[in-house]
Image 1 (cartoon, rainbow, N blue to C red):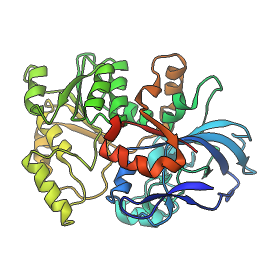
Image 2 (cartoon, rainbow, N blue to C red; image 1 turned 90 degrees about the vertical axis):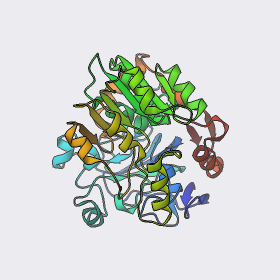
Image 3 (spheres, helix red, strand yellow; image 1 turned 135 degrees about the vertical axis):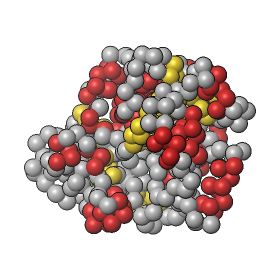
Length: 389
């Protein structure tokens, strides 16, 4: 089969690889009908995440048709149409029973590595390094889905792939980021980053009743999409984020702040961002946490910082005393996808949101390597790429 494979920094190739096979009675094999390039895939593309090996199949946002099921899988049958959450969960461990699916205790088949790096392992993830199990990803013609009697979401025939594809990651990721904020009707929610996750944060905050939503980015197409979703926008290259946020909140600062950027913050004109780039260049720091620092500074005291943006390693010069003294609550984490999918699928069916708004580029799997670069460089108005294998 064809698949997009990682061969090193900024080296993604469309390779011919062996078809996946059933390895456990709870498995399923899914023929991929649609998949997407996610912003967190770019951290692998740019070489910032440890644990990748040459030939690893990329991608964790995909859906398709079940073509084979293991003997113990009673949930799925051949022909079922499913969206597959990026978090692999067993459904039986203590964390899964509590609804914390992204920290499943059993699905990381490299648990000993996860324990050493993180203190305790997190869940297995599709297409996302050997720290999280080394599972083949979904930017391929076929995928083996472990524990397929738990996570896959059956979708109705009246909805298109593009309407439901993002239930596997970016829609519930944006939703969870906002739910973690405990939105009140009087809240201003500030969102750093207007990429795909940021766009779903904006629409989730609006749906959950925030008084004001402010989105921060520098890319014109992303800012326009944010405004279409109900946000007031700040272009950080032409405006002072701190001054504008104070202006928009009567000098009090936003009650809720969301980091939808993660480890590759692109601010360039501030002293801390220049410091980060210098330290990262000589490998004395893995991540660029400019957004985290700025959120801690501007957030209203007793506010909430929500962090769906991916971080990979060691951060420097984080003003934690500022966060402590301002009584800020910090909530983070990979998404517990299956906690939200029933509700979000219903909202799509009822027409509360049409997730296809975020798609700007559609192409074949063979076009994937070039579109990784287009997406990374934000060329051609690229916000979200969907591929049809």
